[in-house]
Length: 352
Image (cartoon, rainbow, N blue to C red; front, side, top):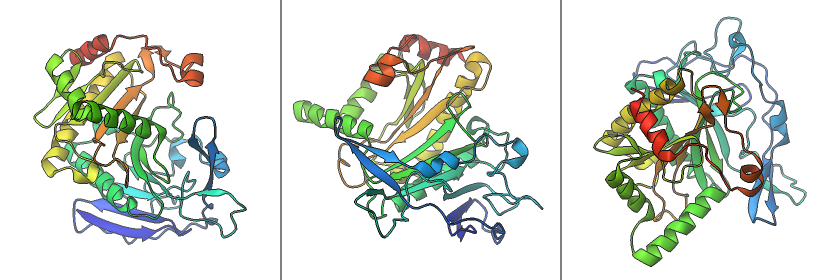
């Protein structure tokens, strides 16, 4: 895998990932851009003990541009974009409107800076593609980028957790239609991860066993919620799924993060993941909006408890209906699901 590091006109880092060593990545960003914004501000919610990030500069981020003005397309004569090259395989660059960054102002005025990093991952140069339509070699390149960034971002000062994810579909709130994901390097451990690790620790103290491995083993044994599987991964609907269609993909070997995956595990994941995404798209005959979220162990705490897995979920509950976070979910965090997880799994198994 060829990895080429360059910089955009405002100094932000951009990295090309190519399967071929002869890829020419000498194109230069010719735009005139303002300097990147400084780090966001962290504020502590004293009632919940959780961090909230205030990033007011993101209010000005690009919002649903016409397809011929997409900033994630390759650059063309007279139309420079965020990617200077006229073509690419997979590319990662610092977000122009980051939630977290290393650009900390000298005078903080007592504020806690949102140090870290926010990156964009472009999965394909094809504006009309989707992750589900990528060939397996391209998925492998994306996984190489995820693993590379996980390893590198984990070494940045102040970073406590690395989160690779994709938001797909206008129904989810995506502001750019081009197939892409993001990576956040957080300066704290996120609330969901803290909660999962707390439950896993209690389970280990009580039973001496690993919580995630026990969940995987029970789902594989029951089979009723398994959507698809191979020798190295299993995809299943969790027993207490919060979303109408939610699938978790677990490797059979306990690993802390993406960087720890073997080549065989990456290839096996690619096959299974694309299969599950295609099943989701076939379910209602329309592209399924979804959030795809990699859960990785934190950088310096709880790594012995963490278990790499991917959570994939959609807000679509029927062909013409979406699930919205209403009072119980949004205000109280108490989810109510309209679809039995066993029924969701059965429908996904049948979507061949």
